[in-house]
Amino acid sequence: MTKNVNAVVWAEIPVSNLAKGRAFYEAILQVEMLTEQMGPMETAVFPYDSDVAVSGHIYEGPTAGDGRGPAVSLMVKDDLPAAMARVTKAGGQVISEAIKIPAGEFFYVIDPDGNRISLFAQA
Image 1 (cartoon, rainbow, N blue to C red):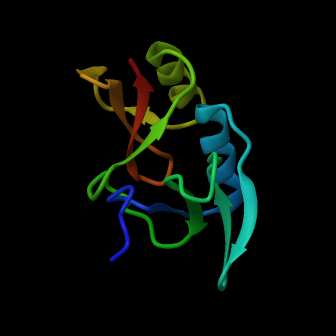
Image 2 (image 1 turned 60 degrees about the vertical axis):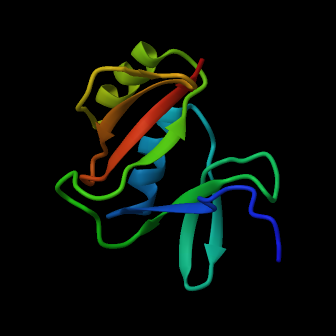
């Protein structure tokens, strides 16, 4: 039996247009995403440190559209007020105040395609 490091191993966020979705996520996270062909799909991959780290990608596909469904949490490098401002500027919608938890704090966002995500900053 192999040892599981993380319960979540990968996240996929559908977008209606890969280039526009990539621009949104790169702007709010202040990162560069890597374009990669995964099977039949062209994707834009969120950066990660190693082959065993949890990460994910965006891809063109059916979107939530209404803010329901699972929320993928993405790490930001700076404070949450700055991240909230970037979300609005990039065309997304902030839908909650910052929520403190022992590991840090986060807030919920609706991306331009209606997907609900959260942005997280470590304590």
